[in-house]
Length: 417
Image (cartoon, rainbow, N blue to C red; front, side, top):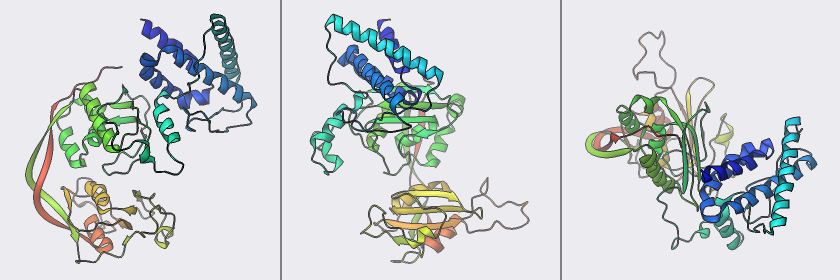
């Protein structure tokens, strides 16, 4: 009961913040409180939230508009900003009045009781170690030096996590969710909104689309129809594979998920060069002098869209064809992006080890796979197989090889937390 009371008080303080700040940071502040209050005590977090409350309301009336401002606090590390939503509504003014009275009463109580507000406070508890490590390393040094390999944390599970049925009606992921290594560090924070269980399993176990489809055939109805929001945090700087490891532990804990794998010989495709030692006209090696893709090539400007550096973008052209654009990517990334375009596992046998740029178009596959017998004219555009051979100089060769299938042993619907 006492634990619920202290959480309720902290939630009330968070709710007194201006609406724009509360929508952006409120959920994360509550996760920080759940994570750290047991070890550091509630007083420190109350003081932290009240200092934030005072700063936000003092800034809001004086600001001329939406004005993000970096903070010099070693805890904030510039990630959080002073923001407001102009003009303030009567409801927001009332909220500000309540916040002011609350601050005066609590400050008066602390002064009378002789309590001292801790100096080492800020809004985000979980960012403390990351911010301190960032300040301790020399300016301009690589980020990896914040956690030397010799002392790097072995990430096994999240420090705190929340799993809920999604009510959002939309999807959101806080970092690239693909099977490749593309990743944007989030300081240990994972937020995935509106995804089905199969998507979480696919990311956690690095499955191919075909493996997920086979696994989902054994799912209970609720696992196919229900979408979930997962928010989790760990202190430190986990890699993308660390996130996978911790998500597997979370799925085992909350969903009681148990899988086992079976490997057997089955049909596969080998991706090879159509002509030994030569690629197609649309597959060009990315300049080694431009690793960050700062130079725009003529090929990029000739098309409607260009993929962000290090990624593969899939879109629809004006003619209704599918377009795949890659920029500074490996053949391994291309293989992973192509798995949904072919009907069997794909193995890289090209021998290409560099990074490449490419753009090509192909006809979208028909529903059901085969030709449309009711169509009066053939579908325009090359098939995916023909397009990669003509434009990229790559060929799909049927073969047999080891194929891994994941078998579902157990899964349970999680309870609300």
